[in-house]
Image 1 (tube, rainbow over the protein chains, first blue to last red):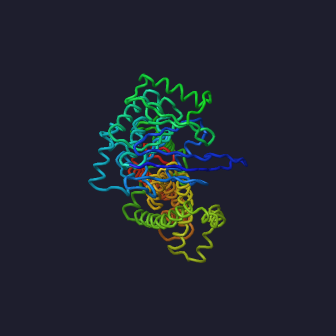
Image 2: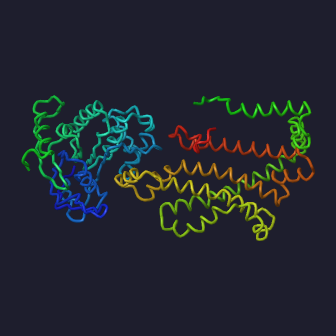
Length: 250
Length: 259
């Protein structure tokens, strides 16, 4: 597991002649094994932040430093889950996971990792299914398994449960929290669902117009069902902060 | 909605055949202009027995298959190159566009002058006729590859080669198969046209030779042989498509033409 430190991260986009600061000097440290949720309005820059951490985009300025078990590291291995499952339609569930292990494991080790990951997300019986045979929730669990089988140093979740119906989403929240209890993983979760952030995260950061405006520690014990004591209050506090009704606690 | 053993497509041709049989039997048709189905079947039998029909089919089929293999070897790699390296497509666009809109049969006189009346001119016509459907469909398939899957490939640390193999190629496969299927149909049309002009064997030659001998029944045999071979090869394409793309429920009718 890795920790990471983001320092002075800036990224400006020119859209129709207008300059927009998608990232306007982000400073953030995420400890090894921690789950940080980033919440904010659409267009606040949270997905851009995640893409920069994943190396999918390059910043105009600033650095992202990784800290591995043996000290500073030049890069890290990521497992990424997007809003939509992004499964290759021409590969079975197993084939999709094999592709994710292309440069990581092969043969018996790959098979064992695939079996473990599918077991973890409760889809061991669906290894030979085609993506079009899966429901939306199942496909998203496969994409989570694809990220987990890589045994990533850092897990990046880009609104991974946003496209699911409310019941499926709530169930997957519980499953994901249980997975993290068994396998703590450094995780950045980008979401617009504040209840989701509070249920899953150790800390919740609020982004507005490319800046981090507040970071909240969530000290509730796991598991955190929706009716858990204190959860509703945390959700209300953070919602108010996102809406700008409270003074930043950062 | 269609079920597996749908017989609806057979209704129209069987009805036409029935009307044709009745009209011929009643003496309502001119036997020279429209021989009876029975007379055409007899002519087919004669051509089959003396081996002529098979000789012409083999000659045409060989030209189509060989020419079509050349097309695939040229068009598919070029589609990948221009799909991945867009500037290359820019350099080639005028030449390809000019060739695309020129009917291959318009080139027959020139090709005969340059290449003679041997196989080379007919193979060239097959290649010219089938190149563009194959090239354009494959190119569209590559260009329409899902950008989100390419982004995913980056997060999985796949190399460019692996991305081409595991993302672009399967993504383009429906387009490739569709293009091959269309191109094959175009090959047949152009080949028969070429054989009408300059050949000593082949179904096109059979038709023109029979016409000159006033054997309309044999003309019909040639036409039906072409139609049957075309339908058979199309059916084989659909079967191959279903095998190549098991993830697509509609792989057997990739072009949207039901089969």
